[in-house]
Image 1 (cartoon, rainbow, N blue to C red):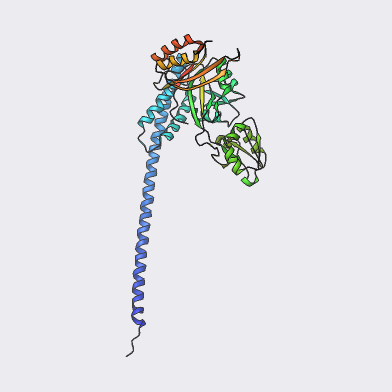
Image 2 (tube, rainbow, N blue to C red; image 1 turned 180 degrees about the vertical axis):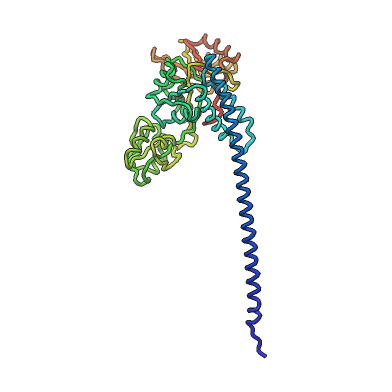
Length: 395
């Protein structure tokens, strides 16, 4: 009798297919259950976040009530709204309390914004800076003092000093040194004649960005400050070597022009892009990845000791051989570590120079105070420009 070879196969197929279908149904059931469990878990976690947010908001407002009381106490005894030593202490304590996983830089930024709101509750705070809006001085001021204070752009660095002295601004933000370009001449010259105190320092990582409202291939002109072109020379020569470079007074002005003219780009800050409605076509185009600018916050009142301070001195030396060496030897004998030294012509007598020195320590520290008194004997004049908390990290 002939055997149908396909018979066993036909008999096997329905059973195998049914088993396969059953496994798929089971897998779908498991998948649906897992998704339901995941959704329930996500809902539970979000509910937990909502509960925590409620507690955070309540605590922040409790803190704000205390801030208002602090403001009244400051007004009563004439204390300044901004206290660099207190700011330093708060940020230091936050750093010590932070056990993660939130990064320290994130937590510091949150607390800076919180303190900015506190200034507004205590008393309106006005900060002058080298304008126009969107400049790196504006960026430094905003990162230091947050979004709840009043900012005033000023035409030049000397105007920042003048407005602080006249009381039109509570504080001023001025650049003092760039890691690539060196000391800022206008700021040093302003310190020679102005009677203000350095009460804080701010270090900002400088990132230059190509800003435009058109595709890269349509860019015909790039505008910015000459110094910025110099800091992006290599990138420009390889990426836009045939594009016309137009120097202007500031990167903010360049951004303003680029926002109004088709085919023009600017090199400027992320803040300038935001303020003038530009897109960041290429970010971080600077040649040096470690480009930093240091800023001073100036005020009419000095800062108190924190235990982690720096002091800025301005002096001229006596007219005798080795006078500068004698001043530096005095500082060295008292264990004063110098972190920066720069010079400027006095503009009063030919070949007379002012020396600008930054050193570790506070001018009220015993060793530092003794060193200053002894150094004065070797100087034509010596002034303490201010003692201030060291910048903990770039903002």
